[in-house]
Length: 170
Ligand code: FEO
Image (cartoon, rainbow, N blue to C red; front, side, top):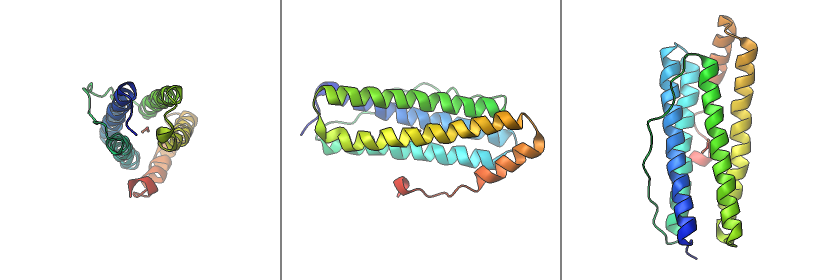
């Protein structure tokens, strides 16, 4: 069943927001690379790639429903950061924005009784809980480290060891 034109528009807004999230992470990865923290940069870059996977999941859904996915205009990413803490705080703020947007999408779909989008939106609600939790934990640890060089290097090594393939990327 086709999405209503209102839901089609809302899904397209979400597609754009996921691409925007990718740009934010990509810019933050560049900043961390500039701080000589290649492990954190790799983690953020991987996250940027995952956001493209998210955008594609929404594109596929809109297309499968017989609607027209459209990528909207994007702003330059606000990803400048003077510190590791600022970088991950920016990432967390953006994840919270994405979570709220998905909740709004869910409410809109429920309001129309659009059952077909439920499985996808449930997947995203769960994914956002995990994404926020992961980034929030990193922010907490960076706060604890508080600019201690060896602490930052340990975290850099740990985040750099993240596996480069994820189930949703396959
Ligand atoms: Fe696709 Fe990290 O939200």
